[in-house]
Length: 416
Image (cartoon, rainbow, N blue to C red):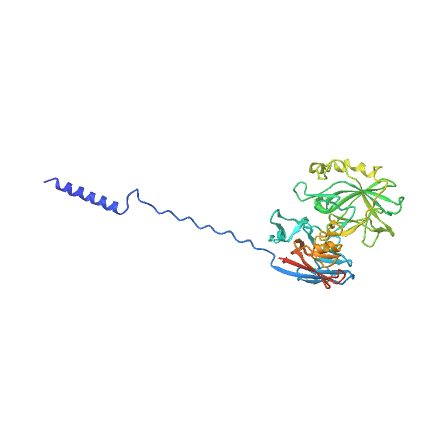
């Protein structure tokens, strides 16, 4: 009789066990997985090129002249003003183009490439005028200024025969200590000649400010060495080698600097001025012309190259003196051979047979290379535009001498 309470208790525990099992208290129950968070989509890149424009460059037959355009206003501009960004000049036959920079104007313009080297389809991928989607961020020197094409013109990316750029990955300029000869009269072998080296680019407070080119030179009749450092950080500085003095644009001068841009005067005292490359120091370049960074970094270069200024073999037996002409990345030298010449923006067809192949009605016509393009910077330096030539139209499609109109298209990144 005393065992019944125990049996009742055991039955109660058994019932509770069944109840807990029915309520899912077992360790073997399936647990629903926690849903994975939905990833936040990457923001869609926003292009800074928010405006478009067209520019019709129309020249009367054989009249020549120049026309300018302002990418900020998207309108034609006065070529005598400071606000134009791109200029077209025509000699009555072949148009050429310039940016408001360097030897073409006082602006901060320039171009990242010539139309021979850049394509419209590639530049359409750019979201910002200071960032190449392939190579990354650009710096101020990425936009090439217009320049004086002559003895001081090089084949490197900055078009300089006197400097190399970014050899140590520090965006700095390095002089190569080449010796240039300058003649005050290229028609007279007895005329005064100077041997010149560019020896530096930095000066100012602390000696590290860019735009302060240093030079040394000798008058070859005396071989007395002189030197100077010029503040060319804010514009063109004109220098008279004979007087060892800064001059003016309208005064007597031999060479001029605008930061790293160099140019040679066309004449002195009415006589034609000219220059030539006389000597390149050993060890600075490979046989293929590639700069050797370690040599440029040698702190003894200034002393080691001094003797080159007074070398006796600087003047060739038959000197080929060069004079300057204004040049721009927008007006590259033509590629190809006559009668077909590629000028970047357009191709010239010099005879009927080649013109017919190109779909033109007559010889001496131009046909747009609509896939060619470039990126330019404004005169103010704070806006950008990619541009290409869409087509060339003639007033008389069968007459190359009739009025021609070059139709350009722009995508513009306005100033911020």
